[in-house]
Length: 422
Ligand SMILES: *[C@@H]1O[C@H](CO)[C@@H](O)[C@H](O)[C@H]1NC(C)=O
Image (cartoon, rainbow, N blue to C red; front, side, top):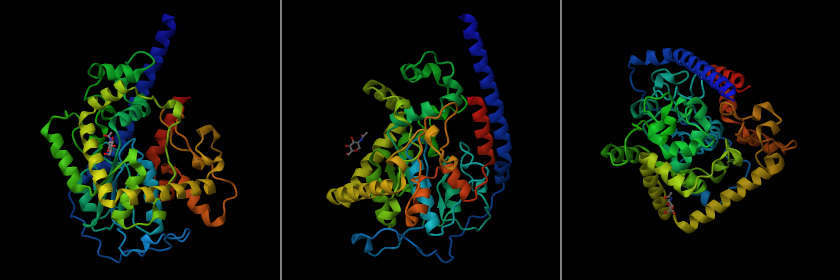
């Protein structure tokens, strides 16, 4: 027995050692791009070129009457994609919108994010040159106001998405635990509970990847994730976010959030069609007890305060929009999504990775698992929907590759991950 234990301990150690080496290599490989950025370049002037026309918009479904109201769609967009918040679903909406309207994406280079957790720097943008015009930024980054502002036209619309920090914590803990060394020494089956019972026993701010375990949303927004909720800096941060971001979506009220987005951006219902991407299979989600939820919110106190603030502002916006009108629009959006799922998805729902037939439809998995669900396209889709269906179901990495992002670092890590998982 003890022989067995020490063997698996040694195995774990080797894995951890190997992982740390590989991560360090990847980190070193990725730093040249960052070093170049110490040299400041002039700020991009606002894109004064002709705005792309709204071409081929929504030719596939009829328009509702309300949507014919006059307004000009906003095309310059900053979406801060936060972790574990349904951001991938929003990303897919934006990638399709941008492509349809021939907008220019500020894309990452070498990986699928902007060298997270390093703060965003516009030198990380693929094909960046001073004065170049970009319309949309939407990939994972650690937010950094001046650099993002310098990249986009001045009238850009900033939005992001937040989720109950107890659920973000559960999801992040599960997804990243193998790459956060702080979790390795937690004993027993239920590491999540053990951690929540004594977070200070296991957590250290200096731990590698430690931000995945504490106030991850605060961290993504570029703030100090070690702040306690009573710290005045937390209120200042919340204030700054509410001044910079015109809209903060809430995952728990996803459709309502999208309708508000459509209203703010002067989009149409068809622009909002989505399938839930990157969801986990139910069995891999730990259903938190009320006590665990309370502990997780408490542990992520800054995020919990942030989340409550923006949940309140979201509902104030729903009130201003009109509750009845909102209910009607949410129903309509759900109806259309259901319609699309009957058109596009084989079997009408998400399946496990092993059941996805087409390699290009397989989503990215966390280390050592295949808990993320994906979809099979129906085989005989009406031609007028086939491109739309395929794009709606294409996972992030494949979609970015299609848009011309060189993903060599991501692919290298994917390859290492597959070997470690054997
Ligand atoms: C968010 O706001 C809604 C509407 O006021 C409320 O029903 C809900 O309980 C809030 N959620 C949380 C987690 O506070």
